[in-house]
Length: 339
Image 1 (cartoon, rainbow, N blue to C red):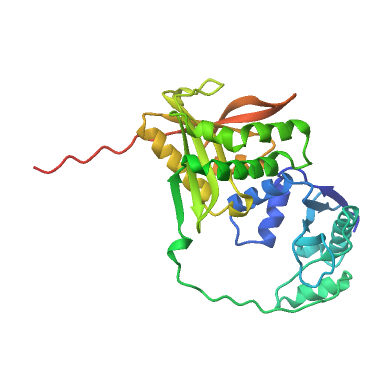
Image 2 (spheres, rainbow, N blue to C red):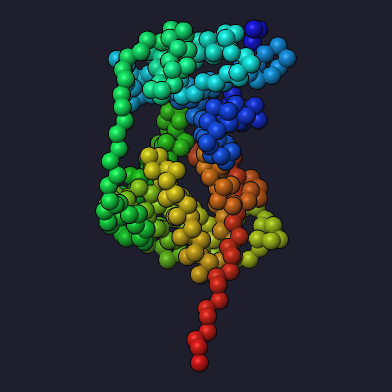
């Protein structure tokens, strides 16, 4: 079958449709969030659509660079097939081979010497397909899990930051900033930003400001994220009529990558909304870097509205940022005591 392969660097309806067929248990919101996260890290993930002569999308492969240990491999990093799907009508026509060969080429260009994959033990069709595509079976494992009663240490604790938390927040902020902005490596301006904004002294100075509030998230005794906001600050673009009123700015919502997608960021945002509403704010707003697709998708799912664009300058570079806003519902009226 004549095919055209297209590297996906933006969200696309055909990509979503094939993902639905491959992983039918996922919701569209979950698929779209994952897709946005994949295209936001092209140095780590790559995905291709295969189209037939008529332009119809007939196959999909998603690949990743894995630096953690992959069963049966001998080197690191490893190129890994995260997903492979071909429409039933297009199977046994070389579509899967073309897609896998493209993923293998991509991995080899990035220093990988192995292309790995996996399949459920009962999925014998997938086993046969892998063998036909040149894969050799390396290991078979059976997964076990034993449920444990949750301990008090497993609960998430949100608490106001104290002065002696400044070193923890400085290190956490440095790591999240670098993970977000330095995806292609560090430059002098990014290093200057980290050394200026994310030091214990800089964090301590912000904690000492009465209008600046910081709430941190603690998991099993470890600080994993924080939200920082300022009261009485208006956004750099006009607020829509429905959002006008006293405003507060979420200056930072930082969460370690390994603790994302657990509901912690949503809990921190809700706590900030509750606190600022109690202080008379009608609108909460923030800015998000245009290149951070994962964050923008998260805020959209939380109900934030895109109201315009501004820029954040780091050294000589200006980074376009979207301005997002959230209307704060009025706090429920207290029930009068019975007489």
